[in-house]
Length: 106
Image (cartoon, rainbow, N blue to C red; front, side):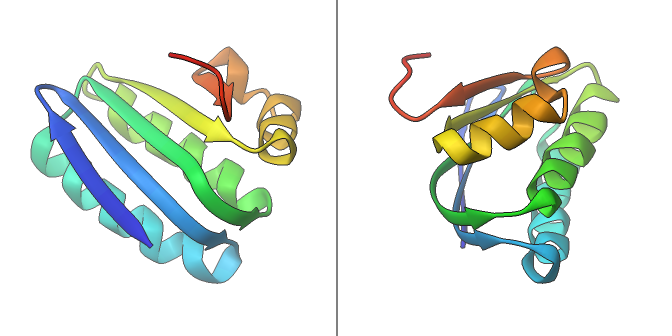
């Protein structure tokens, strides 16, 4: 469900499957463990293989933003489906982090 890739001070987390109330806690824990260990300057959450996301996904992103920004890092959420992008934008996440729909070049 989660894969990590690290290049320099950038950590990319590839998410897949469903992100809902039941799965979000485990995802948060794994990302936080790696973020606390590596202290990346950029944390990229790649939603390219996420098949479903509810409001728990917004909470997941907001919490990881707080965690990474506590040590001076920044966060991007990329490869969001149009539906996930809309949820993120409506929640105001675009004001604190870079969010991009699928197919948009970084």
